[in-house]
Length: 181
Image (cartoon, rainbow, N blue to C red; front, side):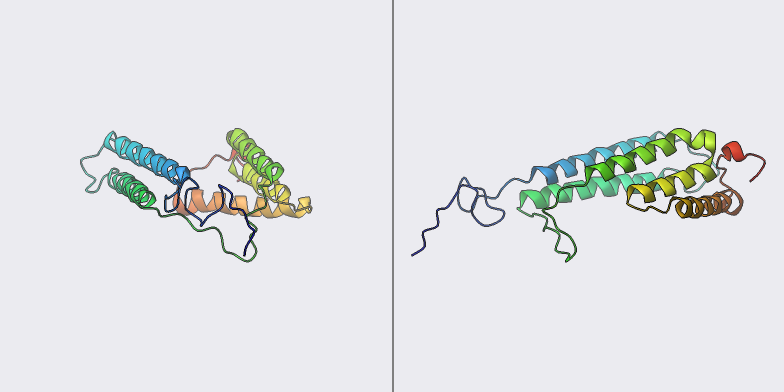
């Protein structure tokens, strides 16, 4: 005979400890569903307020309407699936340990690098801010070859600047490199 004592948390995954067969409510899935619905509804609302030119047969409203409607439909489908007891499966990758907590110092470093890029892109320009973004992200993720990271970031940022400005005709700010690029 087994001498194990069942605790209130014991039981098959997905069942509420309040009773057998009672599915546990997954509030995170309902929260995600609500966020998807709000974003989808706002996207549809924002698309409805766009000015439409008379010469444009499709207009700028079509894609935001499709994306907003898709988000709203996905939201409803997720809420229905959650109500029916569907729960996401944990990560099954062999190199992922789901019990390890988040590395918050790394996350905060990355957030700082992104905020620095946002704050300086209009003054430095995309070429330099993109290089700082690349090198800073590499540093936050553990790289210790700062010179190489800055050089690679500069090459990628200048190449993307030229791709947008020359290739696509989309102006990006050159910042302090105005006249050089």
